Image (cartoon, rainbow, N blue to C red; front, side):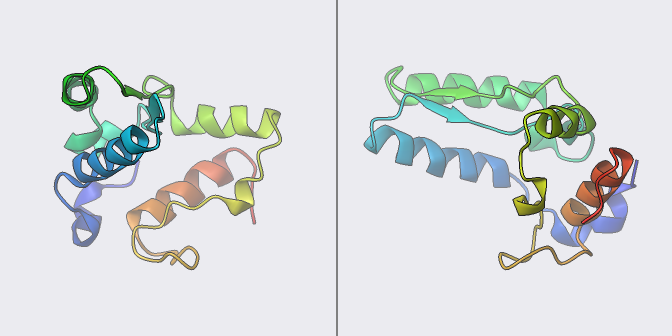
Length: 129
């Protein structure tokens, strides 16, 4: 695994908490019952707001904060990113259209932790774009 200390410039504390809050508010007002969060088992090694405990805490907050109208779901919480890629390949998901960049919305920067980790996982599974 890549050492996280090398990428501290890209760490934003509680970022996932903020993103979950926005997603839940949008879901609530558009009458959606579920917010799907793409956490994987690898995520918590680098970010405390990706841990199982954080997810459980956020799930309870969402449940009570929306009067049980919205549920927070993390279907890959106990699955590695490599396994997610393998499943995506079996389902013919166009992985070349996905992005993990922390700093660029136009395309991958290739330098941030998200880009480096994504490239590593994709190459490990035989994908090169």
